Length: 167
Image (cartoon, rainbow, N blue to C red):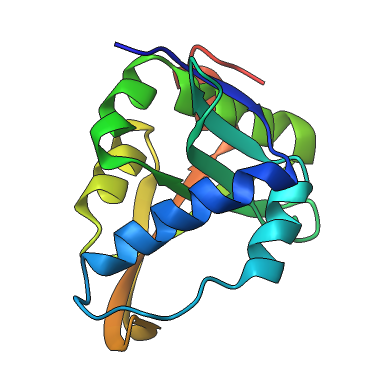
């Protein structure tokens, strides 16, 4: 069984991460053909965000954080091969990614917006002690469907108290 580790992203990570996004999209629509926004994804990957790789160095997931809002909060975005989500959590990689975000950005909290149908992401956020603090009805379009979104947040003080990977 391959090991997982974290590293900074490079532009070479675009094709495998784009494939992960397209695979995710295909679960919602059988005929999904919308192209991945290459410029947006490349900008994120070239920013040196966190990529989860297997022991061969192949990208199997990633974490991105938007620009901090007045040093108060940053929003997390992530994608991971579903089969590896539990391993990434148990190995402490996700805790390290969260700790890195608190350390690098110096924010008071990390926020997440998750579609109500994304059970794996909801499970992961709850395991990481994010607290659900809202529901936005008919908030966004996801592959042509209007969907609801849960709002989650994790405060730095709570994280530092309850996680082993303190920033």
